[in-house]
Image 1: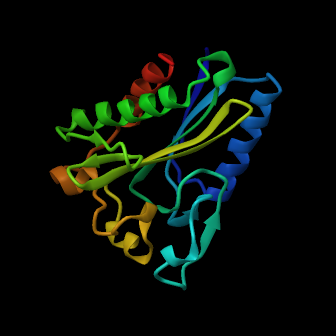
Image 2 (image 1 turned 45 degrees about the horizontal axis):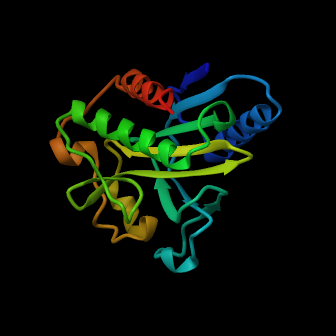
Length: 203
């Protein structure tokens, strides 16, 4: 299967990204165009998944955007990399567990490049470093088209998480690549895309 890889250098608003993502989903449902892997950053944006509730908003002054992905309330901000995808599982294995495994494996492999040991938790989706969450995963499947994706905290401002209960967690249990190894990593998007393409193509 042919997957188009997009790497955006400028930050893309959440609203604009969703329009593009949803258009690609409809194209895949119609059997048109390529699948998509899109790496980008958002400006500071709080989003609420379908399992969220208002009690998770600690700072009532913030604006929270509702979305159709799975999961609860989370944060997107500069320094966090978003990996969106639109994948047609009709042309692959219709196996959600294999898709989750491919995403988890990709994040763990990427972190290992920077000597960070990422682990998965059977009870809480996402990738963890010891007891701190470094990557979130949330997607939706419609007619076996999988879309949305995951986020990896690279060097974002972790204090912004204090305004919410992120993914239902204690907001002090969030970490980043920079917090773990104190290294500012650069020009790593191609590495992420190569790892994800390899693992997605194994589904």
